[in-house]
Image (tube, rainbow, N blue to C red):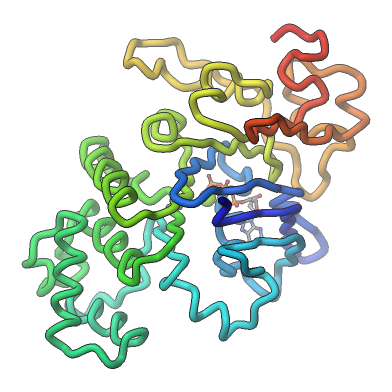
Length: 325
Ligand SMILES: Nc1ncnc2c1ncn2[C@@H]1O[C@H](COP(=O)(O)OP(=O)(O)OP(=O)(O)O)[C@@H](O)[C@H]1O
Ligand SMILES: [Mg+2]
């Protein structure tokens, strides 16, 4: 069963006289307790999509369209008050610099206790402290962090605090946006291991935004490939990696070193993302696509959905129409 269902999501940023089409008609479903990696190069709309789900987009400079159903409720139609009850309790997020939300002049433990009290005002001080320490244990933070200030923490500890905060109220869905990107590879892989363990224990559903396809391959069951605000391919990681059907996914996979750790020549895709204020008439990827045909420049492709939920937005759906990749 789906926990999150995104239907025809669109986000336009309005900056002066220009309209930036940051998310373009994105639809996909996320099942309960599933883990979905969202990949795509910088500027492809990954964070905008996450902010749309979390209703954190700037109200005065963005316009959203579409439906986001979460646990049978339509998120975009909720009032601010209704949504506030859900944010952090059912729907939580960890960003690259989530700790910025905490004050640098108060001890970590006390701030966390105060946050807990906002949603659970009737719980005793002792119980609240117990909960904070339990969260520390869950994310492998030593108890002494309770008495420390933000500047006394390492980058890894900070992200662990952010993860602990996001788990405070046992959310159903956790969205991680480049949450481990700035860390060294060892700390990053430790935290990702912990997250996967916690996900099982707490029956969490996880959406994870990253630039790194190998992280998706190692930690997610499904992958969503975004480009210029469009969802070009979606499906099981095993299927997409074994047989990518969109030329962009093929290029993206080639641009990562061999997953088995062997040295591989790094492939770089020529060209840049299109101007999001003037999207191409046809397929958004056509100007960079080595397989583009006439039709690709004039007519936008429909998304083809296969039986197992795999989606591909290409006129030639992975070579099925006579094009050999
Ligand atoms: N607040 C904003 N106002 C105007 N334009 C924005 C705003 N936030 C993002 N954009 C634009 O929307 C597009 C998508 O940006 P977004 O941050 O969602 O991409 P991303 O895939 O998360 O990139 P990255 O991998 O670099 O984090 C970009 O062209 C960006 O410049
Ligand atoms: Mg981003």
